[in-house]
Image 1 (cartoon, rainbow, N blue to C red):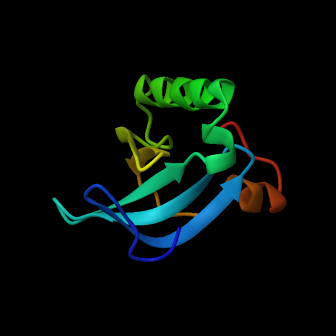
Image 2: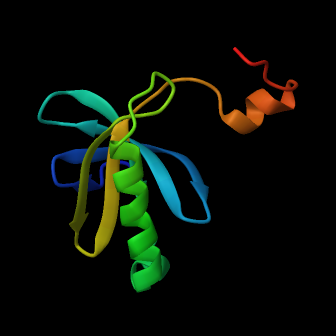
Image 3: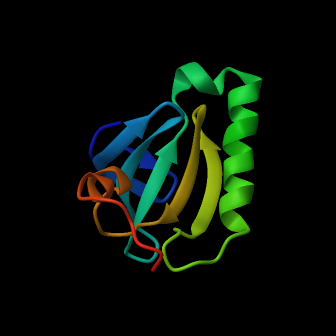
Length: 107
C-alpha cells in the first residue's frame, strides 16, 4: 500500500513492517485526527479461509487484552477485498531490536 491509500476513514502514511501473516502501516484516522497502526492481511492470504480465520482469531485475542505494553484494537474491517485490523499506534523499538541489546529482566 502506498502513502495516501484510504481504507474507509483511515489514510496510509508509511509502512512500519511486514511478516508472515501481514503488513503493518502507520495511518491516520481522519475522523478524529489520531495516528493508528493498520495490519493488512496480504491478498495471497485473504483468499485462504484458514488464514482469514487466524486473522480474525488474532483480532479477538487482542480485543480481550488490556495491558500497557499491548496495543488496543480499535476496529476490524474489509474494504475492496482487503482485510485489516486498526490498532493503537505505540512508539518505540521493536522487540527484536530490544532483544539484540540483551535479555529482558523480570520487570
